[in-house]
Length: 210
Image (cartoon, rainbow, N blue to C red; front, side, top):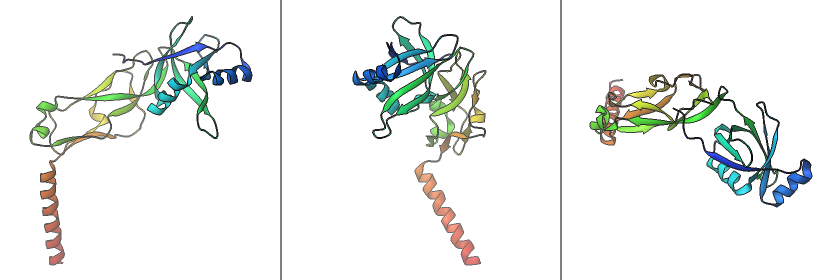
């Protein structure tokens, strides 16, 4: 059930304090710290280009990583803070927290739409409009779903699919406390235009009668 967790490679940072951190930055690295769990904090360096790309990809603080450090056991971590240069807005330090399998974490999970070829609404020319291709769920670190599934086999034009329509994995729950929309089956543009014209004619007739 667990999804693929991206690897994040780092190296142990020798030395501590501002001097070692400055040297790391001169060497094209971003200093960081890994804390939490039953292990002592670990000072690390991450290649600047790797971290910068991850940050540009978005949702860095809500992505679970498999941290790989030479000489250390792999560990699941999540970012807790990224310090940036106040002028250049570039990362200067990063903090990671170790997670146990029983730890709860909020992550964005991909939504998979199945049976589109059997969907009555799509067969009639309807269009699947995806509002949320991903949904943020609070899950166990040891049981992260790769995706959640919405079955379109019985959906028709005009149907709106909410989070309440999805059977979530055991232990998972949405981070948003309302029944938000994930997708809908909208009418073909031709039908929508015809409907809008009819509504316009009806509105004109009502205005004339008044």
